[in-house]
Length: 152
Image (tube, rainbow, N blue to C red):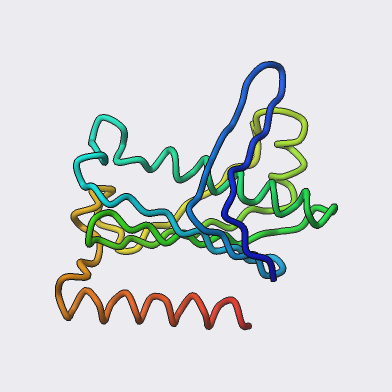
């Protein structure tokens, strides 16, 4: 297991992908990213509530994990996003085929699906609210489910 708190940088043909997750834990084919923003005003609809940035961070995190491992493998990446007092969870499974196609350029055949929980919509106000007992219980339950999936 390794824990990182630095940025990832990938450049190709003068294009750059830069992602700086707050905290990352790697364990084999699993990674857990924690992303936080203390200010709800920074997360806006016209920026898709920051979800395209989350997708970029998922790919950058996975790419860094493959670089460290020096081999290509299927990966499961979990994201815990905290905005103000609201918590949303994300999961992406990235296949070996996707990584190989990405290495050759922008993937045309392979894709990634990112699941969100709760899945109502991308507005962070629809996440679990840590200010309520129900929200705190839902967050603890979700964290326990992530732990169970990583252990199996």
